[in-house]
Length: 146
Image (cartoon, rainbow, N blue to C red; front, side):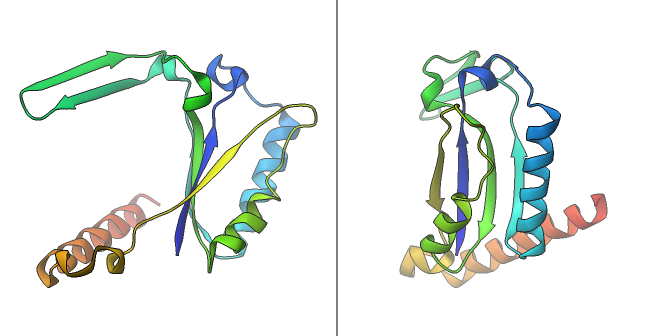
């Protein structure tokens, strides 16, 4: 199963306060453990929401672009990973190992990604073939850039 690990934003991340060398080293070492375990599929940190945009849709008739920053830091994300794990319990076990700074409250959210079998018969063989083709194309593009 694939799990998205959502790193919640903090006052520091939303104000552009960059991590220390020690924090970067600890996170780099943790990421290396994830890669060596064969479970890290992707991961990145995000700039503060002041550099972001939101696009709000009301059908096709009304599309609105909203400039950051966005209110409610607790609802924002500062980064993410995509992990391949055997179970949610394994994801939790790895999440417990995420380097955390003493005295600073931080939070991650673990969310399972949909897999093809989750969609039942609505995912026709044609749609499944399209999904497989797109995934293979993305992987090939990443390999070229890599």
